[in-house]
Image 1 (cartoon, one colour):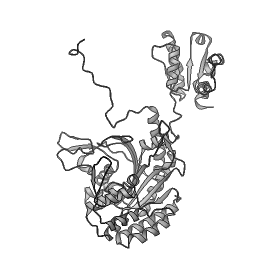
Image 2 (cartoon, one colour):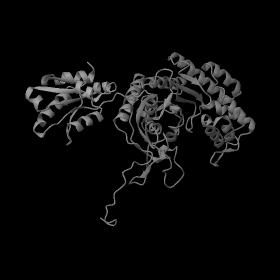
Image 3 (tube, rainbow, N blue to C red):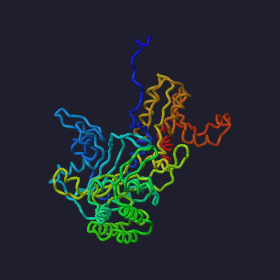
Image 4 (cartoon, rainbow, N blue to C red):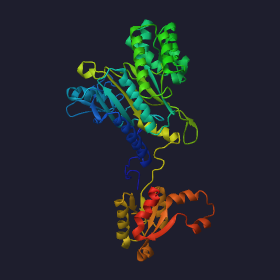
Length: 492
């Protein structure tokens, strides 16, 4: 076949930033979602699912002023020429839903949601274009206690997801504090304020010296690229850095006292301090310890729509990559108060607060910390197929196991027994069922306990000893098949 006549076959490849996930990854995420959802429901939050697409003008955050609104989102034009985009988070759809249904909703409206979100951004290590989030939000309450409740749920949800107490901390701040500080320093331009927020948000990566440059004229990175700064005076920049350093240990009350000395008595700053004090009191009542939730003025969150309290969950567990090298996961979730988001639709301020888990990121972090929730995931029991004449016996055995709630399959390939056993091992099957001609004639069944076999294999180095001992293999009457397999699968 010449090059001219060769078929034009597409290359088998995944789009950049999108993952193929097998059972282990999916089961881990499902277990996290089930555990966290149960926490949300215990707090009285209602499940809600909105569609994958929203009209582009309803999303707002990423969209540029351009003919095709696809920067930051994946957009397409409907047949009525309106632009739609895949949701980039679960909060913007909630704001649209609340505005659309406000008259009929119980107020405050307490909902949780989970599902995939999509972002049309440059992918990189640990940065995907599609990932799963799990949110809880309260819409319609301006009380700081609503923020505290969200934080308490987040702390409980992290433990339910598989993180032991003390392995994560939720860091809390209030945007009003920094706004008050900037007002005292004479900064009123909104773009300049946004520049300050973006600079402070890079503190953990660039350190105080790098942020100092971004608060001033700007910073040139190692590649030579220049990022324009916020343009603060040297005195204002130092005031901002002093503010971010006020966390510095101690309990929440101590941090509040230090912040009060720095803010300078501005009205907005004082309002932020009062809200944090109310949050502290509610957290104590809810049983959230000083170790689980701390006040940290360096936390500002990058999104522009936050208007008050902001919070971020940070993983403290030691984690390693596949080669055993240390890995820092950092943030595994965050949120805050966004009192103006619903107003984009109604023109009326509706207070709201919420928290979002990055489920895919949390699952990866748990695996890196050796706490994989899907570590014990096994495949189905495999019924070995010897010849076509006995297929009825194989399917009957599999059917009995399934009826008893045990996952089972008949091997439907064309390989011999050795390859079938290898197949069962690759599927992480707990057991293999052998119904050869002799077993069928005698009314018996042979069962290989593959879990036990894997465990014993680690301690046997002599192959002849292994074959002689036949570890994990039993024979029993055919009528006892389900009971024998159940004992292996369920450990009882």
